[in-house]
Image: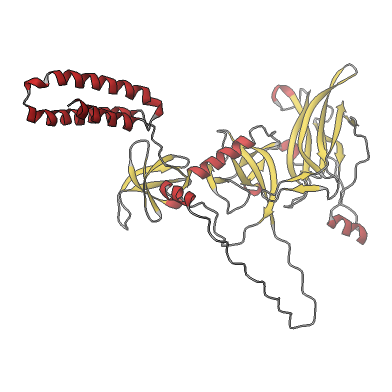
Length: 449
């Protein structure tokens, strides 16, 4: 009898060994059950011998059933999660042309996967609402982690400007219209601009990039499978010569688009098309853009004027960087202007202009010691011709060997300072060179009034 009872509870101990974190607890339970078995063994003399083995086996089964739920309670279960990547949608009780709505989910909401179907997923919400949702309405945990990793990589990037979103728009994982998208920003949301990139515009009708959602079991099975054989390479056929004897025309350059890596007030981070937002620029100086696109305007200092409409009559003075209204330029800006406030005329005037250059963000604002106190100062990066590096994955353009130019402003006079006092090369665009060769005069530079 002792061997039979002892043969049951070592099995319980073996079942508990798969959870090392609770192994000690299970060992104590086994010792407790063994004592109970010994206690029962002393009282089996009152039971006929033919019934003793059945009673012992029944006691072991009952003890095993009582112990296993306690062990499972400490086991941490891993659930497959997906996240809603559309504005909002409904869960349905079945996949059919006619079905009932069982719940509503919105952008960014986490859902637990219950079952995989063909192009549909059966999911459960935090309210225990269970229903079916289309697979392309959600992203899997891998894509969600990619967005989180992107935010982690750029959490310390300086904010180069702020902007306002024109209408509802999605954040993308990479620059490009067809890149994976997730978080939806509402209209008039304020965002911080971090990095600019230029990529070719997606062809019309191109399908958006999207990772298929694969069940965990299939993923684990694929890990042990042998690698697939490489695809057969196609031999390029010789290009047919044109019927005419003329030379072939060169391929047209792709149409480029500018994208910004942005961060919203909730900390969500992603890529946003530059044309879907407006940079925050005060109207008082924004009117002096002269047809150029304003990249950023930064407050250098303030000056008191009783007739100024600014808060506390402190009129701000700005340094502004601008660029031509084109996409895909190999720099962030090509013009720097400083606007000071005239106390006599109660208006802004241009105190400094530097153009054309190959400037790069960020623009840094500071104060430097001067005789009798401190003065406002600013600095930025300067490129050198075609010496730029373009990231092939993101399209981010950075100067390979940048120079840092520093300026200070005393009263209304802007002067260059710092260790780098070498000449600044003028970066003329192709259009400006053509106009110069044709004898055309450049557009007049109007003074801000």
